[in-house]
Length: 460
Image (cartoon, rainbow, N blue to C red):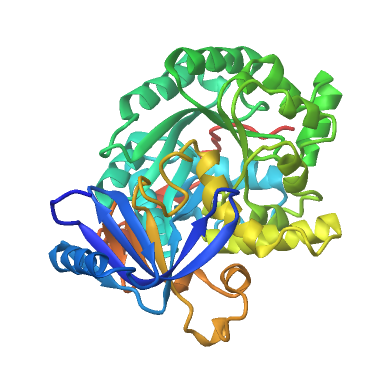
């Protein structure tokens, strides 16, 4: 233990822990000591000796910040494993539409108007929403990502960022994605990690996917892309090309890299052996609310992926399709939909859902060694949750209360790398009213579709 004062000490909380079998447990009367952005110690229960009590009192007296979290739960910060943060600017713009019309008639025409300033303001508003909801890290896949990286650096959140590209952009799209990933890797004092970000097999051809896989291996970068988003995409790919989107990823070498696949509701039984036999680290992000809105007939096959040892992280997708960036809602919906689709009320349990929201989500974005659990040596990404509201009382089962009763608004405090970004529901790093005012001024130009242009065409 260092002789220098701790940066932060959190006392009196109940803490969510993962045991050596990766099971969820809760330990009461916890004290968490943070130094240099890292969790130094987690102790629970009364101190066992006079010496330990004296040491604890000294740390508490000297700590730079102290949070009395009596009556609250300390959880690892939630991770949004796939989103398009700047798309909060389009929240509610394209409603009640089938997927093809949603893309071709509204979203992709509007995105042809995007400026870097629009992306910056959208990202700022999205980060505010996520911090208030207890999200400490998000995986983003969008355009003008240097603007998003700047917002991440300023507001203090953690992010896994990729500059999206289509084959219609020519070689420049892929090169821009690589340049961004190399330029921003390790930025924001290490809080930014990066990925190559081809959009999807239906918008990026085999040659570009193969080149991306080669670049990923050469530069030690992961890949983040959409694939088998829905059953229609899988069936169309089979009809046109004789292979599924997952099989396209295999033949182009993407599955030989570390890859995060968004959605996967169109993963077929024939894809499971392909995913099982990959040489790279494969993960899938599930964002169930959007699937319900689009009336897709299937959902991410979480149980089948679990049986293969493939981590499934929780996500929201962009707020243009999901309308929110609420990972709490994704956690509850994932559990409920899995019960419904498997016909088994014992799957997913609340503890399993919490595991997906914490350690599995950290694995999905390649950060399992640094975040996802509250333990010595992990980065101090911690949220404090208040369960004293009438909608969470009485508490008979803490896990069930967290998954099925708690709301994102029950998060009182959000901490990333030991820095408090929200305390007692007050955002400390983002001026939301100023962002909203500026964003509203830009809406007429952003929403104009009279030009008839699109950034891409959806045809699957």
